[in-house]
Image (cartoon, rainbow, N blue to C red):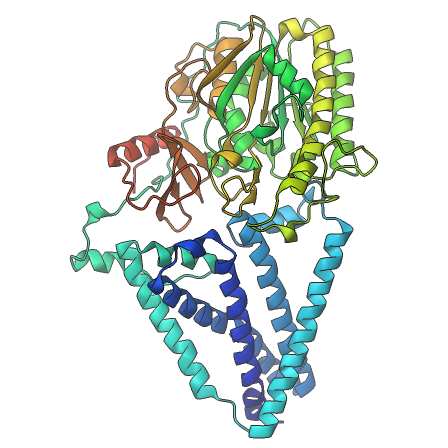
Length: 613
C-alpha cells in the first residue's frame, strides 16, 4: 500500500474516531449542572466546540500513524499504532471526565502528582470491585475501536470513497463558528457559552476583548478584573515580631481531613461533641480552601495559599512556627497521610528539627491508630517544664477506607466508595453512612488523645479541633461530591472547637476563618504584641468583626465569600462568576468595585509593592 493509499484508507477511521471523541466530550456537559443553564446559542457553540476540538485531538494519532508508515513501511504496524493511540485517547478522555465531574478541573500536573507521587497510596484508596469495573470499561473501548476500524476499512473497500470533503467541511465550520461565537460571548458575558467552554480539556477558544474595547463595543469600566496583580518582593511578616514571653501553654491542633460539619453531633461523634459542649465552639467557621493544601497552609500561615510558591521558593515559614521555635517549644507532628505530598514538611516545618513527615501503616485506619499511639508515647516522654506544640492529622474520614473487620454503626452503608455510582439523582444515604462510620472511628481515636491530655496536661494546654476542609455529599443537589470542586458551605465550612486554660462553655456564631487560628495562638498564647496585620489575614477568634470578603482557594482558582455567603469566584481563565450559597448563578449581582479592590489589596499585603492589573 502506498503512502497515499494509507492516508486515504485511514482517514475514515480518523473521522469516525473524532465524532466518537466529540460525543465523549459532550457528556462532560450533560453530566454537569451547567446543562440546566444552557440556551440555544450555548448549545450551538458547544456542539461546534466539541466537534472541532475532537477533530484536532484525534488528528494526532492519525498523523503519528502516517509517520509510522513512512518510517517503517509496514501497513499493519502503522494501523495498529493509529488504533492503539485512539484507544489510549478514549481512555484518557473517559478518566478525565470522571475527574472533571468530581473536581471541576481537568487532569493536570497536580492530579498526576497526587496519583503517582510520594504517598499516593495514602491519598487514594480504590476497592477491588472498582478495579474490575474499570477493567470492563477498558475492554469495551478496545473492542469498540477494533470494530470501528474494521467497519471503516470495509466501507472504504466497498465504495472506494473517504468522504473527506463533507467531514473536513464539518470540522472547519465547527472550528470557525465556535471560535467566533466565543469571541463575542466573552465580551458580552454570555455565560452559557463561556462557562460551557471550560468543560473541554485544554480547549483555548479565541477572545477579542481588546478589539471590542477599541471598537467601542464595551468600555474598560464594564470589565471586572479580579486578578491579584503583579507579584513583588515578599514582606512577611511586615514588621519584626515582638512578644512579651507568652503563657508557655502547650498547644495541640487536631485536624480531621475532609470533615463534614454535619457529623458533629452526639450520634456520629459522641466524644468530640461532648468535649465541644464543655468548651468553646465557633459554629460559622470557614476553612481557607476546599482542599488540603490550601486548608492547612491557611491554618498555619494565617494567609491564603496564593503565597504557596512564593513561600516555598524563598523558604519562608509560618510566623507561628518561627515563634514557637524562638520560645523553645518542642514541636512534633503526627500525620496519617504523608506530609511530603503536599509538601508541608518543607513549606511549613523545614526549619524545625524532629518533624515526622509520615506514619507507617497499610491503611488510613492503621496510620490513624498508630499516630494516636505515637502521640501518647510522646506525651509520656515529654518534660512538663518545657512547653510543646503537637499537630495531629487524621485521614480515615478522607479515605473512606473503613476496615471490614469493624462493626458498622450506621447502615445501610457501602462497603467501599464506588465513585462511578455518584450522580445527582442517587440516594446519598449509603455513601453518607460509610463516611459516618469512618468519622465515628476517628472520634474514638480523638477521644483517646483528649483523655490522655486530661490526665496530664489539659489544664495547661490549648487544644484546637478542626478540619482542613469540608466534604460534600450533594447537599446543594448540583451533583457535587467530595471537595476541591466548589466553595459552598459543605466544602469550606468545618467545625472549630477550642479549649484553653480559662475556658468556659460558650458558643460563638459570628463568622471565623482558618486565618484567625494562628493569629489567636500568636496573640493569646505566645504573647505577640504586633498588630494582627503584621503576620496574617485573620483576626482574633473572639473578635466578632464580620469577616467579609474571606478568600478561599489559591492563585489558579480562588473565590471571595461575601455578605450572605455569596461566592465571588475567579476562574482560572480570569472570568468572574457569582453564586449564592447553594451554587445558583447570580448573573445580575454586581459587587462593589471598591470592595473588590480592597479585598485584593488585603490579599496582596505581603507583597511589598503589589499593583493590581
